[in-house]
Length: 327
Image (cartoon, rainbow, N blue to C red; front, side, top):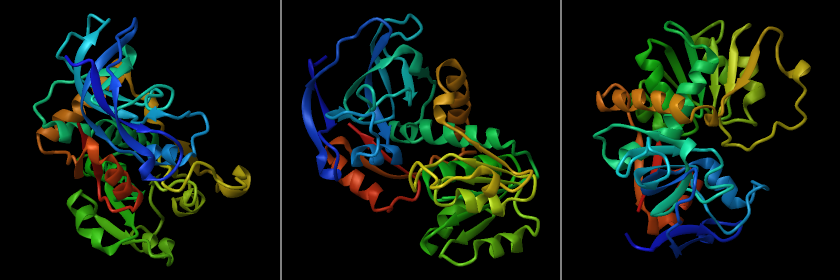
């Protein structure tokens, strides 16, 4: 194994150009950690916001990447022998320590989820953060067969994954997109009703489908739409905020004034699913993708050396589904 590796280093806050390909030493294994040869990493909006300087706890230079898949190159954990296929998400990777935008990543053993699969690396790389978030969000909402689910931010990778899961569970779905050119992609993902959110009355169109409103809203846009989602959901329904496409904070949030009586607001964070619990869920997801019941929704695959173009593509909102980087 080489003693050096290529990595995309975020050298400072700024535009995509602050991501520089550099040769770095391959990290040395230490107690409680494993060295993973990265074979793919899904890109996430939170990484874009960190790169822009909106994560004050993250210092630069830093190798970003809150998720990756690959094989164990060396480990201090007997349950992770060399050659084991693993995935890792969150747990401060790419923030407090270097993440998945590299040929190798030194990661905490507790973060690694072994998985058995025949999927290609780019497809596997599209699944962990996206599908674990979608799965956990639907569980947080308590969605059941026959329920009515509105997905806001439907063409995000999590939105399309949620549509795929919901369709398989017999849940009625509607999803929003800002672009009419993405209607076919959402329909293919399993969405029953696609709503183009063009600034008009979304409530009128939602209530034309479900006069009482949806039972649940999965809001992946976040802070700019969360309060509106609380007004859209039926009385006694639930809204889950699981995305930050529009930022982190709801300005002047007043729960008593903004949450209708009896309506519930919750959130889901994929950090809740890691270790053995996350591994079990991820294995089920991988099995469903292999069986053709869940769609991986890979939009585009970039090489690591093209990370600047990949971030620019993500920042320009050109993706319908997941963007993946492979070394």
